[in-house]
Length: 248
Image (cartoon, rainbow, N blue to C red; front, side, top):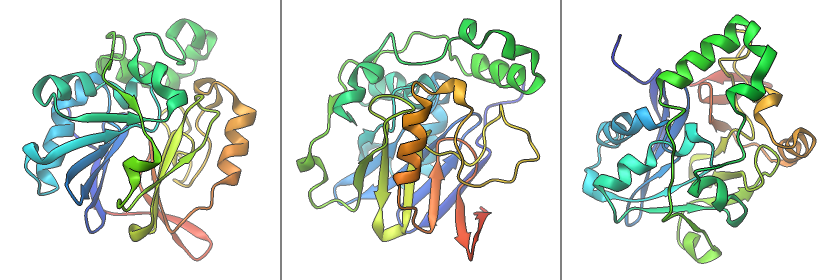
């Protein structure tokens, strides 16, 4: 089996590195007092996530916190391995998302609930990639806490509630980079979608989402800056009326 590797690593702005992982994505941020992550991939991605901190030009002992977009295992699965090595790292999420982040049960589709959709080859391929990423490993992050307004004082980011995909899904606006980190509130592509679909901001495949109507409402309410950094698919930037993948 080939070793795990990111699909792409892109510096989208000073201090902002976007990693399109093997199955899901994360972001490395340079902050005023150290380094932060937004999300942390699957359980099998722990080493990739830490390597990406180094690739972004930081030391691992600079890692201070992880902001979570939502508590699905493909976004928090790497956290237990990170915290085992760096127990001082804070994990922050919206208060409505804490149960999902802490686990082990969470608001997430199961293979049994996917059911007959497994007949679709692309869904079956995605499930294989997910299982190979340790998607079935029980994941708990008991130290996760709810962020407050004080956590963002003096920081170049703003959390934006985008409920629907999960109860406490959160996007993070990065004004200095003219970018938004959307988690799965908006993606640019997912492995369960046709490969021919051009990358652009879109809804994730509905069976992953707890409340599709609310998710669509949240996505429509977002004011999109020039750059979208999604939980799945490549980073894209707006060129005129089109969305174009950002090349490494």
